[in-house]
Image 1 (cartoon, rainbow, N blue to C red):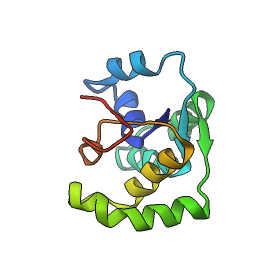
Image 2 (cartoon, helix red, strand yellow):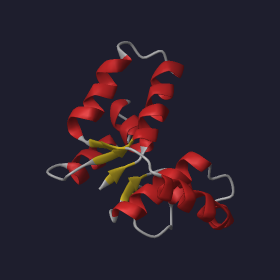
Image 3 (spheres, rainbow, N blue to C red):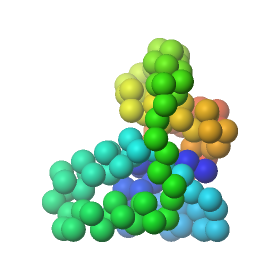
Length: 125
């Protein structure tokens, strides 16, 4: 399964759904988009988290980081208008991560409201 940035941030900040995340992902092959590293890095910086590299290394250690390719980029660009029809302010990064999950044939795990109700999402309430 491909973990969205939202999952890592919720887990790291020990948010209310961190336990549910832990139960869902235990024993699974985990993947993370390289774009999520950027989003998590931004969150760590914006929140003044000490030793941000420690958190990014945990992502790298516990999941396989996937790079983007041209086909995923094109698919995201083509699908963004339709995605925005369902989630008005869904951004390009979310569209890229969603397209990456689709092209990899795996579900995207997230609690980000932009993804609620989309196909192949394991939504964490």
